[in-house]
Figure 1 (cartoon, rainbow, N blue to C red):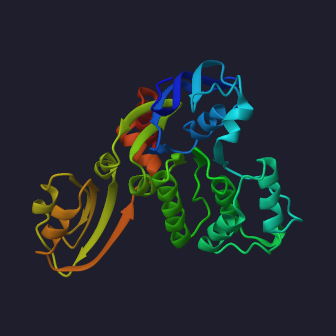
Figure 2 (figure 1 turned 180 degrees about the horizontal axis):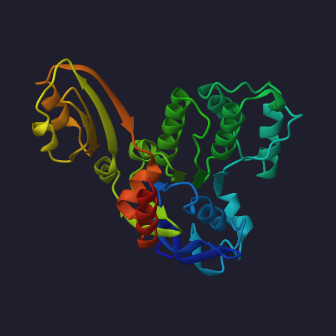
Length: 312
């Protein structure tokens, strides 16, 4: 494994019975990198991360994490990694502090408790509360704190902001940037394009168990699609709008209302609409699954999509 790499997978294959979750995943993540792992639900994100920790074993391919083979030495790998699973197992009868101290004991009491309190304070996590009385979001904060508290070399985070409100999401982003600035490598999965765009240095996009693209976060802007629903105070000529680059007219109503699909930058459309007598406008963000179907559809997807449309 190259010295500058924190993670390397080559030809990673994993099946659950007849379901092929991973079909040859190739990844290289540099040390100190904030690396986003983006894909729709069921694409293989969680399976890939669990293979890196030897929580499950692939049927084929090679994995190296921090220069170690997790299948040969899983204990050494886990000593160096902070992990946020999709759902952390918690003891409901414990208080938050007791649960975190238990995790700290398992890791050889490496954590500085002043730092743990600092993390908890930043996330508005009450260490004295009983876990059974916590919301999903507060339980997710425990997952984030336990991953960060020992200041590991590598953070593997499976959708780390799941269940958190926007303010707490921003705090998690700050903590991950801080960890990377301190030398840690951060590998996090997400199905939220805006999250990966805001946080990652580089992005891998997985679909149906295969990496379909590696890109800079700026590439995600061009993938964004939105539907504009616009009403006008009077009937207007809609042709100038339909001729704009990246704009597709989906429906119109006697020149007084229009629905437009907009890909990428919205600037040209906004400037064009400023010349019209607009009475109301709403924007509908296209789901990630729809975006992936548009950009990375397989032949099977396209066939199924055509069949579905013919039934309408």
